[in-house]
Length: 148
Image 1: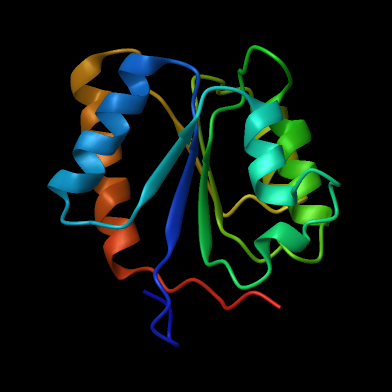
Image 2 (image 1 turned 180 degrees about the vertical axis):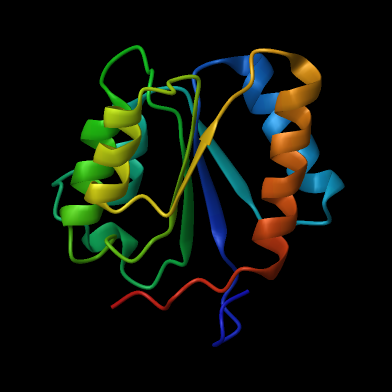
């Protein structure tokens, strides 16, 4: 919930079905019951976030939190991050990057573009599950700013 009481919708952009299930399971295990809308590619996610015309007006009044994988089949997650953070209607939406990429330049670029959190997915299942559980606890206490 936001300070005004509006529910926060979690937008999950993740093309690996196993990772998506694991993310949702551990978010739920952490007690977060917010709606999660999954997308497996950037094109559909951006259409949802920015609308068919790309103006971003589709997100006016929405309270969003975005989980973003950088390695998607149709476009790079960095491009999605850049579009979301440069749009006046979505720029305040927190973005959590969840990816296997641990290149320091890529991490810095994401933060420079406005990512709020960058989590490197451990290759092993237990490490990844633990990271997602911690992320779920983060969501449980996080305040999302109101959109314009």
